[in-house]
Figure 1 (cartoon, rainbow, N blue to C red):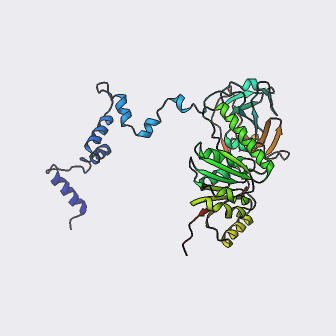
Figure 2 (cartoon, rainbow, N blue to C red; figure 1 turned 30 degrees about the vertical axis):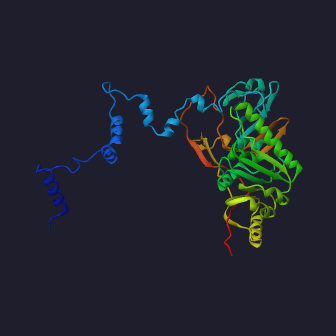
Figure 3 (tube, rainbow, N blue to C red; figure 1 turned 90 degrees about the horizontal axis):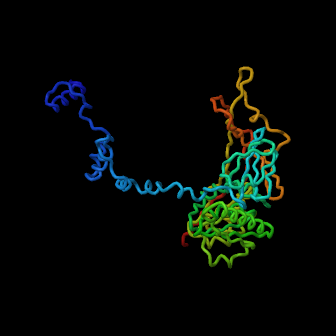
Length: 421
């Protein structure tokens, strides 16, 4: 029996006209040649044209033709940098919010939120900085206080503002809000119902998600919570307009009313999604479910699992057209990555990475006038000094001793069309 390898060699020799030993890969095609054979003639010529090696003798294709050959997304991303960054580019101005970060010992970061005023002063544990020294600077600058401490100054993000703004009831934390927005699958232009305005945290995130063409209708039963939510929303809205070229959408309607008694209001409305952040959400489901579109999602924010059980039991006993798809608890695991210190020929953790000060809470919030201070355990390095030189040092990496605790259970309910009996 002839071995398969010998049969292969004979076939190659016969194909090459008996020219002795011919390598099997001698006539193989390059990846570019194989690609050109699979493309139509006009596209193959375009590939061959731009694949030629550049030389001084070969002329280059005009920029207009190259841009026409690029995909649409690539052409759109090649706008002038000043046009793409116009929304957030610009110095800090009087009247807008600024966030100052001070890195401290014992694995803590001190965050201070204040509104810039020409005659005011930023007070911190590390000294003072006059607001006039901050106004006109670009975000991201590090300034030294009167005591020599270095503070990073920048515009706050929305989640930072939510954590630092004045609050009455417990807010919906950003880690939970992001999960709820994914549950709801909100698009720009949607109309969303929120029950439980609270301090206005979730209202701000919903406002950004639905955009200028969308609408958020937020119900609140308590007068003090209703007023606080409107105040926090307006404060962010007004300060945003000072530091940004585009306006924040003014698309939230705050209603002071019990949602369980708003059946008449719901008759003329249709919602793409519903969010319930209240003690007894089952009392609102029977009122709002006719206004939710078929297949729409209702996300419920509850503090403990017994409330979730009670909610599902009420849905079943009242035969409401909702199917429970998910019940989740959002947790984050914080890590510390810090330079190590060599002591007695052993690698040990730095002082900033040591044990937490028992006198200091993990999150200590203080409000003085128009300035709010937040102590957070983050485990970041201190801001580097310009005089310091960077060098390679060993690092310590481990999970943080302080982790984000439980905040809520998120229940995803989907409205369905009951079968005809």
